[in-house]
Amino acid sequence: MSLHDRPTLAELLQAVRGYLNEEVAKTSDRRARFRALIAANVLAIAERELSTAGQDARIEDERLRALGYAAGDAAARRRTLCAEIRAGRFDPPPRFAAALAYAREMVERKLAVSNPRYLES
Image 1 (cartoon, helix red, strand yellow):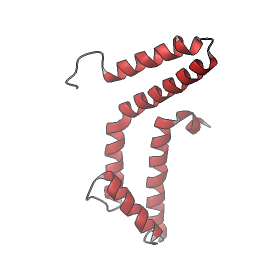
Image 2: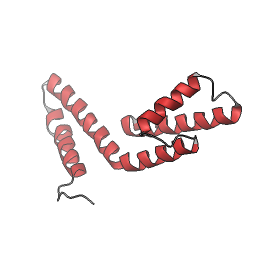
Image 3: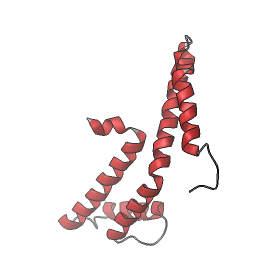
Image 4: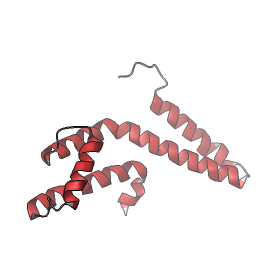
């Protein structure tokens, strides 16, 4: 639930993206058309991130806690995890498998927002 009335942020993004795709991208000006398509793509990424941000943050928090990282914000915990991987603390097979599963899931979640077509192939 948002403090703000309609249109929601998602609806605003969708409306602007629709305008870019349906009006500006059909112009005969190739440069304007190209830029409109890029802008529409950026708005689509923003829409996807907006729709999954809360769930993604909760899932990453759960996965980091399961790996033993509960203190600090997610970015700090990621940096600590990366430093420990580089230091060889995740070399034993079970720890390596857990870290790899975390990394794979987070990359897939990021791709689902930034370039979902990549996951389809």
